[in-house]
Image (tube, rainbow, N blue to C red; front, side, top):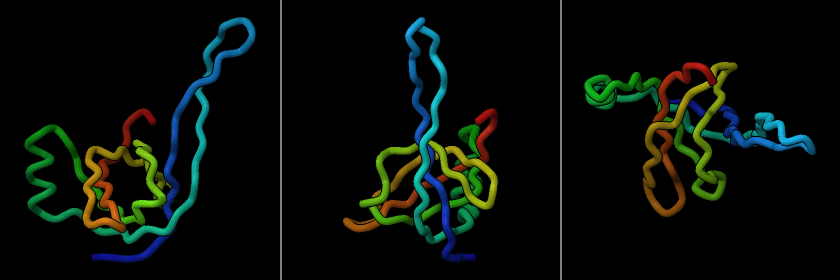
Length: 100
């Protein structure tokens, strides 16, 4: 099943204050994506490699800057593979994020 929806690409960094304490910091940007359930083959191969594939998000290559976390419908997913589908689009293969 394929549908168009908004997703958030999340960048995780850290800041250091004046006394040296490091605090995590997140920034996000909202973009439009084509949301696709992963294929049976992707699911099986991912499972054999310790992954739990959930979705593939097809986005404009201009909107992607290497983010490793995606938020979709209130849940967070970890990008385990980014695939350049063609010169204009990237497919982000994601699994449910644990501890993010």
